[in-house]
Length: 395
Image 1 (cartoon, rainbow, N blue to C red):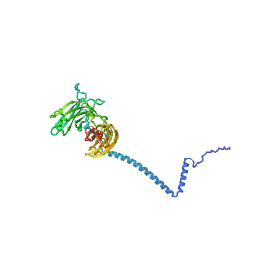
Image 2 (cartoon, rainbow, N blue to C red):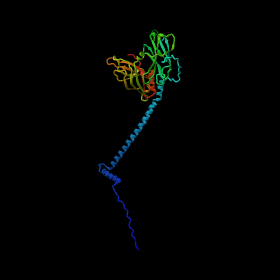
Image 3 (cartoon, rainbow, N blue to C red):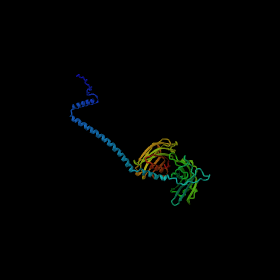
Image 4 (tube, helix red, strand yellow):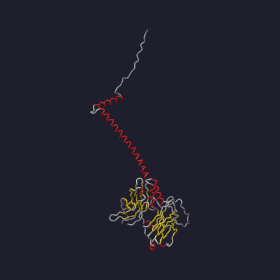
């Protein structure tokens, strides 16, 4: 029987390659490092211990850094929460609104007057009252209401208020609250001029100046009502309407000037920041018809001066520009007891510096100054800028 030889099946098995490829390279490197470690002058177990200790130190450092970052975030949140709890911002806003109510009454419910006859002057009319107390030598002046005032704003309305002066003594002056967006304001405010002897009244004049309030520019003078006391029967209470007349240039020209600045109060930090921006139309104090003005700021509490600051001196100008910021430390517990006094001074090299005019701001202020203070408290952390007319003062 014939046999058939079947050829044997051959299988090509690739030879095992060592020390080639990634695994081989890694093994070779580890062998080299282990060989070098064996030649070190310290035992092998000590090398391993050092490595373990180093790894533990690295992990501890990373853990401490992460913990510190997390704790810092928590502390900042807790700190902010604690500050909010210690000084309630709503309480600050309510305090500002309380002051604001003194100078900015709601005018929505006030009655307006009907149209007058064709002969009514364009500047409108003012009603006032005069009541002289012969025993106390006191003149009680009332600013009652006005009607048919001209519209000074783009909207056709005005924001009127009235300044009351006793001439020729210009230092004695009062100011009513501002009434928003109305041509027929009802004031009903009374002011007392003290120490007025009856024998001196014949030389006195009660002057009512009606203004339109503007926060970002100089207030517009609408007109005036002049009442010589020699022409009034003071034996009885006088109450009458008078036509508002165009103001004389001399009356408005006697002003010491205007100043613009911003107030910002941060109750949680207890910081009061004032930025002196600019002034204009300042009084001429030097021989050349100019001045060297600077602004002095003084913070008082219970008639005691706490701190004072001042701006730089601007040479030979009546319209200086400063844009300088100053900060006072005023905790919220004291904000209702402090008074901020701003005085514009004329610098003089050879003699005493002359005061040009001043302003007093605080919870006991009146008029535009109290309005600015209340707006600052009603808007914590926000700078509130406003123009003010300086008050004349003695040199």
